[in-house]
Image (tube, rainbow, N blue to C red; front, side, top):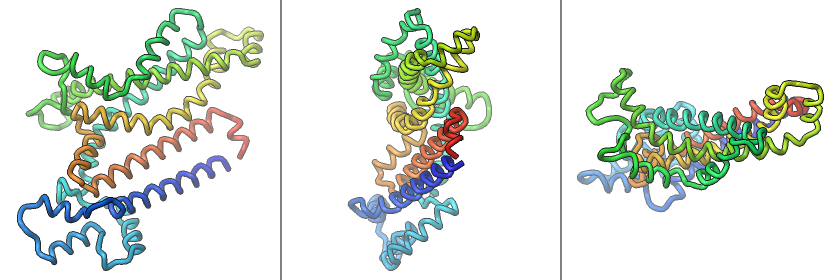
Amino acid sequence: MSFLLRRLAFYLFTAWAAVTINFLLPRMMPGDPVLSLISRAQGQLDTDAIRSLYILFGLDEEKSFLRQYVEYLGQLLSGDLGLSFTFFPTPVAAVIGDSLPWTLALVGFTTVLSFLLGTGLGVLAGWRRGSWVELILPVTTFLASIPYFWLGLIAITLLAGQGGAFPASGGFDPGVVPAWDWEFIGSAIHHTLLPAATILVTSMAGWVLSMRNMMVTVSAEDYITVAHAKGLPERRVMLSYAARNALLPNVSGFALQLGLIVGGTLLVEIVFSYPGVGFQLFQAVGAKDYPLLQGIFLIVTLSVLAANLLADLVYLLLDPRTRREG
């Protein structure tokens, strides 16, 4: 229990630090976000209208820095992430809400599937050393070194475009109305297959290599020899004794790698013009949309923290020694 409480305290502190950095970002960056919005607007605004924009975006100079910070925390607690410059006056929460399901479908599916497939292949490759399973190691080593976006460009060149089997960009076919029907769902799946395969191939390779190396190390432990001496079935020794202990570092690495996967997915979404959070972030950077940048940064940070907390809970269940610390 003490282990869990310490981790919760750590993640709460980290979340507070992320929120504070998020508050400071537009105030530390060069330039004025409100003037950036005005420069793209048609016509001229009078002084009162400009001051209203500063108040609207929480940058009122008449308020103290501390008061702005407290009001910002209050807005976050109420779910208010501000208004987007690019899609003004649409709230940032609505913009992210439209793009987040696309990223969750892409990243969530590929992350879980790559972890399961890579871990399973790694278990077999490490347990059956010298067999045909180890032939995949050179291939996985090569694939693990390829960046997501570079493989995406190759995939578009070879498999997409005119005459290709897959679309080169977008989340669904032009003219299809987003709705819960088979026409839209089928079109969305068709557009997701190529970017998903790009992420899956490169991220799965790392899990194969790490799990294989851990299985080789665990196989030499005394408790594996004792399990064999007891006459336990080979499958049980492999899964219940070797794989369970070899899996522990991968569980921790799974959450740590999530941040890298999100970063890689951002580039994949840009390459494929996929309508997810990463593509929205790319557009926000180009448009200097500070509220949208803040909102996406906060969502990504909190998502990674939640994934790490979930990994800690799984680790707590898998490793009895952690439970005894409490």
